[in-house]
Length: 144
Image: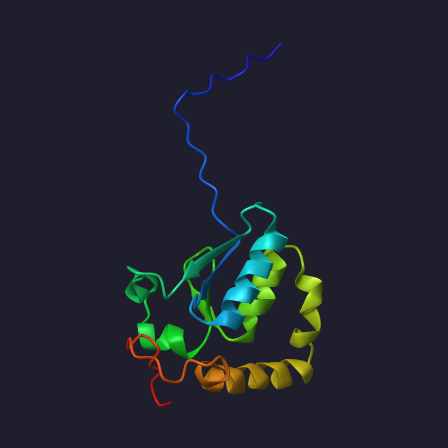
């Protein structure tokens, strides 16, 4: 019979989420979407959600700027690469086991339409969510 290898008592197991999404917690629509995704994740840890409006958030930790993360949604792949736009939603829903809900947004032709639609939403999101007159300076989006 083979010998069972001994395990070290101090072995640590690190669980890394399948995907991380950077959301604007001051945006009512963004916050609602993040809460839905967290509920769909059911505590499995497939999706990490980071609030870019939280005190102490540092965009440079992700190799980007606050203006950039305010301008469009960002997601972080397990290898640290950033992605933006609709692809973030496709990956986030995939990470919580509901990729099928947005799969159609990645189909040829529809992908282009959905990606362009999100870019339009991102351009006007502050105004659409009632935040066009932010006085904190954190709401400023370059070129808007």
